[in-house]
Image (cartoon, rainbow, N blue to C red; front, side, top):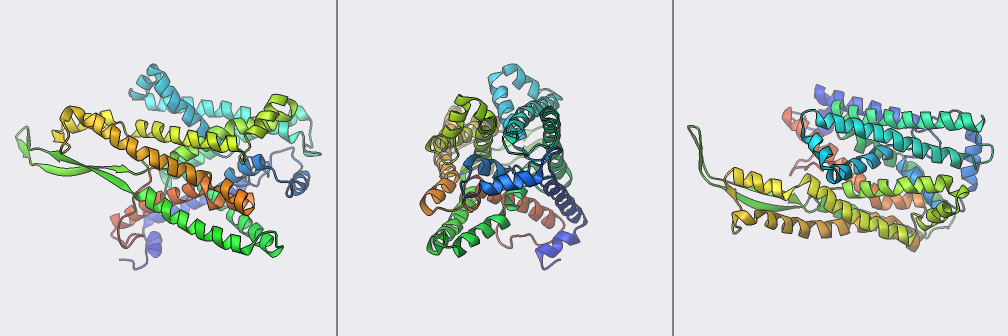
Amino acid sequence: MATNPLVGIFRVKELRERVIFTMLMLIVFRLGAVLPIPGINVNALKAYFLSQQNTGNAIVDYLDFFAGGAFTNFSVFMLGIMPYISMSIIMQLFLIIFPSLKKLSEEEGGRKKIQSYQRMGTVVICLIQSYAVTVWADRIPNAITISKLSYTLIAMITVTTGTMFLMWIGEQITKRGIGNGISLLIFAGIVARLPRAVWELVTKVKNRELNPVFMIVVFVMFIAVVALVVFEQQGQRKIPVNYAKRVVGRKMYGAQNTYIPFKINPSGVIPVIFASSLLTFPLQIASGIGANVKWLADFSRWLSPHGVAYNILYTLLIIFFAYFYTQVSLNPIEIAKNIRENGGSIPGIRTDKIEEYLMAILNRIILPGSLYLALIAILPTIIQTLFNFPASISYLMGGTSLLILVGVDLDTMSQVDALLKMHHHDGLARKGHIRSRNL
């Protein structure tokens, strides 16, 4: 038995192959993030963004952060995986709005058809967003080295292909690697920004543009928030369920006492990712072609990531998606039906009132959980406003990035831990159990 869990990872053949495959796929992702679109003048881009450093551009910083720096590089992966997530949200809403689509998803082979529709929808969203990017690039002096029409066509095809390739990488990591592929791509993009963000912070402290005391206060706040996020993500409300003795065929099954584990935050980090993706889509279009259309330019300024309107809308969307996704993944009617069919009961609750009881429990859990998520999500704006921190480090100190980093890390560690214990090795956690985040 391996004394060191990290050594055990590379001693188990299956786990070693999965980890190496995942690392190779992430390396391909990072290489693509610095590979520019054909027809782009890289030097002109660097000069433009260097001139924008002092004034700052909240929209560009926001889009670039979630693309792992690929957006300002005008790389083939500049849209990241967000178009796929946006289409996932739209498809989930369609499944509720259109009963025929919901019925199709429940039929044999229906899930594959839904996935094919989702991929086609992702292509449409990529084409719209990539066109907005080409319009925005046209405003940068000397950025385009070929004709505008040729660049528009090449950029739209290249960027759309890049996003679809990222989808394929994510699926391959989930199938042949370790962890959730789509989540790991977002995770890798955020982690790739860490060295630059830390260096920018150190430079500001050296130049006395930032008070060192503020930096220490924010760092302590960051540690406290990480601890609270881990605690909240791992918390559960256990609903006791008792099963009576029953006879099935010639066998008699004895009474059994178990429980339903409802997480304090049942939907995990999904509401934050959904809300960010849904706001990124109109934000990118408005910022891309806003200069040519007055009302879009006004909308882009109104929806600035540092503005009050954006953060209010962001909070409301997080709360909405927390309720929405929980109802999709944890349906109280289905849970109550399964309990009754298996002869179970909840102590002190009538059998016909199980749905209402479970719904009341979920509603009491979801509201504080979603408000907590919203508070963490708007933390970067609070840090920037109060302490004048650079955007790159503020996004890492809280918000979507922090929730994704913690959530994906817990999910990946739980899978590694399970594989190690299956092969009779020590897990990553010597005490306790790492619960999957089901991202």
